[in-house]
Length: 111
Ligand SMILES: [Zn+2]
Figure 1 (tube, rainbow, N blue to C red):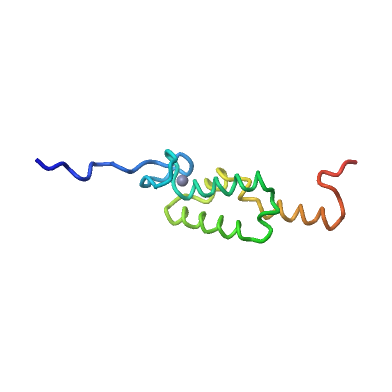
Figure 2 (figure 1 turned 120 degrees about the vertical axis):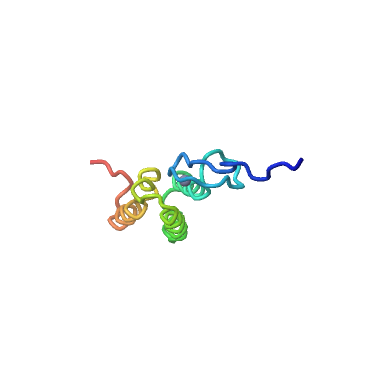
């Protein structure tokens, strides 16, 4: 007697990060969709390397691509920006950094 190849609900889960239902990815991470996984990776890069890494704009393009992908899957931008708040405001962080360099001020200048 042949086995059923497709079980109902098999391989589908709800992403704990953005809340969308998706298929299990090849990544060895439970209950996180591929886009959230990559966004979390970018956020790690931000905390490890600092905003300097993003000044070239490459990380930002990747972030925007991933966010656009999630929005296409019906996730609201608000949820994404809440989950990845430091990534969402990376432009502001870069502006602050460049401003403090221009003014010759040290990071967190004391008064
Ligand atoms: Zn997700």
